[in-house]
Length: 316
Ligand code: UDP
Ligand code: MG
Image 1 (cartoon, helix red, strand yellow):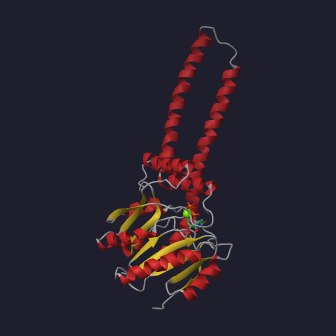
Image 2 (cartoon, rainbow, N blue to C red):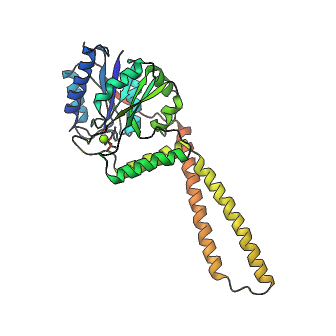
Image 3 (cartoon, rainbow, N blue to C red):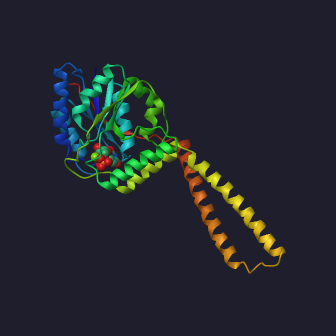
């Protein structure tokens, strides 16, 4: 089988040489064991990097028979970069594995991915055994995220990031999903087919720093939730019903007080309720606005990435 390793890269000049060395060794050893075909490749996607990432990929492409590269015209974010790589690989591979440039995901389990593929699985999820290499904060936020997704009824694989194998057939199915707000972890389970999990330890980044600061992480999580669940909208309607009910009770109370003549000047209550309701309404409008924003971008159906160059590598 032809295996493609798809690696999105954003400002990864510090890691690319080492990553290539390790991935090429891996492919070589698998070719020797007859696990994969010699047409297997490493496909780097340069996600509009501002450093020397693309120059390095070009250099590696001429020097190393395994390396191919795709250059995106702009920085489109990890998910879009990954998709562009997978869609490019789809044409040439039997299966593709997506992994990060920093090799935080243990490359030793690539063999296991392929074994599962050979057993007939179309999608193999890499699942983290433990989160010992994470800070408390990262672990807490990440695990809460998976739990919230579950409560909201979104089918995601617990502790699985974007380290996964997908067969050609699964990639073709993925290409049918045309959404612009891309959250692959939510889409892939929707594809179905036969799946299985492979467990691994996640290491520290061996060089460079994270390209996912807190701001991007929050945006990613919000995207995941609002692209896959309409429960927040339902919660708001429920909140509206409860508040209307409470206000009826308050109204009856106010009328009764007025009729029996114990009504006090109600300035405080009025001001308080104006503020409270104003706040709730604004909040609700904000949530509705989020969805309208999404409808807006989906309706425009802009391309999610534009490949500038594709460096092929057909050396044997
Ligand atoms: N990445 C990307 N585009 C971006 C941000 C990140 O292609 O806009 C890539 C990055 O080069 C890396 C992967 O996504 O290969 C995961 O990023 P990183 O390792 O920085 O995230 P972390 O592991 O800290 O969550
Ligand atoms: Mg990383």
